[in-house]
Image 1 (cartoon, protein in one colour):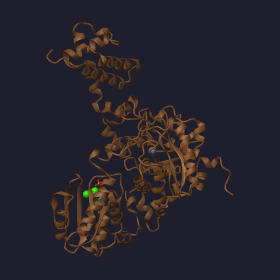
Image 2: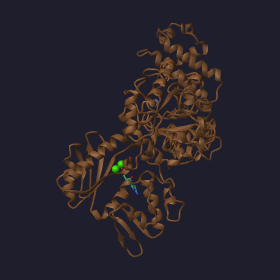
Image 3: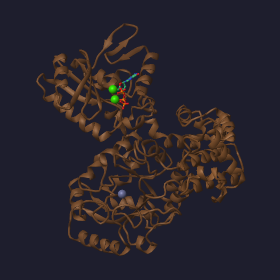
Image 4: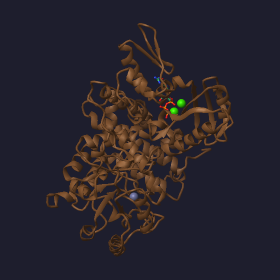
Length: 587
Ligand code: DGT
Ligand code: CA
Ligand code: CA
Ligand code: ZN
């Protein structure tokens, strides 16, 4: 043999065969035998190929006659005949399906044999098209989980840029355009960044100028621009040094509103708007709205002109996703909700200090929160077992509670709440005892370890935490990281139902890498009767300002101030949650 297979290659082949048998509905013990053998081979310090050659393979734990023969075939022919036969029945993509959270081999096989779904990409497409919700054995819950589990791929892979960096770049470019030689009458961010999405594909800017060509030249000369990719009298496309592409559209002031409306999107919103307008005799484009009967063209300096002409009340950019906003905003429609605003928020209920992995002292966080106009701030350092940074021991937490009480009587200008972010252990228990938890003003519980349990176990874990009398809120309830890590497997319907039942708040964590709950989850939670809290999870004084991204998610989730508990005073908030069920009713 010129190139004997390595132990790792042999182990991979046996693991794959185990997966194939599992897909094929084989006995569980058989499947486990292949996995056990694969592990033994991987861990063998001797070359397994050499052992087989010497007839000594059965010295390895878990390798009997059958497995020895299969490994022999693999070494002799490069393939195991049983695997070849099964692979003809189940394409590689079907094995990949079994590795998605919440999808075992049984489901993967049903997806493949009943629906012809043969890869994670095909599954994602079927979920996005709404094909799974009506299938027996799958349903809307499964479909939502698929979308959540594959959200990373859905948003287009890691080439998208998180909103804060895109906005920062956009604001610099807008300032550059307004400052540049030929005066831009107006320049602003459009596209997905204006809609405050989680991550943007490219940045879109809309500007008006009396001399568009001169403004296009000035744009190309801005220090952020690396190279101009395309340039015309009305549009410039350029790459920035940051690697994000920028589309700049230019219009005369009289058409600014039309252009801004068009390039704010979303494409789905625009398409629905156009179809609706067409049915009523209008043609909508970035240049204006024309009446088909008379040919008259309406242009608008202000964006709202377009919506008013077509019979809509104002639609905030965050809602322009064709998720019911057009119907609601029609003049005789039900109306859009009055969306929560950042200035409605009266306190932040999740932040860290040097006691765990934060950078500032309690006093510094308190002053910064007071400067933001908050009435209250909960200090929620991590409990013992979250797995990174310093842990707060029970004794240290007791000291911190006392220190916070002392600070409150010293007149800081803000009410501090002694809190904790306790880790929810895999069995659903918390890592402080109930007495200590009972001494806290505010407890948020969250998962920071063991993310890969089954959907059922993850859901039960969160349900136990929500049923705990001391837990006020669940922080970043799905564990996803935008563009990096999908949500853990989770039955959202149960999560929302138990949160509503127990009076547990669910967090929209505003950290722009989390935004967890997502806008879709937050909307579904509110519809299920859950009260949300929007928190910064600040690890420094500056990070308190990240709250705006949580508010953006809340707005994109159609939430009103009434849906967000921390738009209320601390007393009122307590009455709205679990603590309120233990308090005497307000007189
Ligand atoms: P992105 O860049 O992937 O984060 O998302 P957007 O929404 O910024 O998309 P982009 O940059 O391709 O286009 C900017 C806007 O232009 C979009 O929100 C709406 C409008 N637009 C783009 N393509 C279409 C289209 O095919 N139909 C219509 N009606 N509008 C479009
Ligand atoms: Ca864009
Ligand atoms: Ca674009
Ligand atoms: Zn935290």
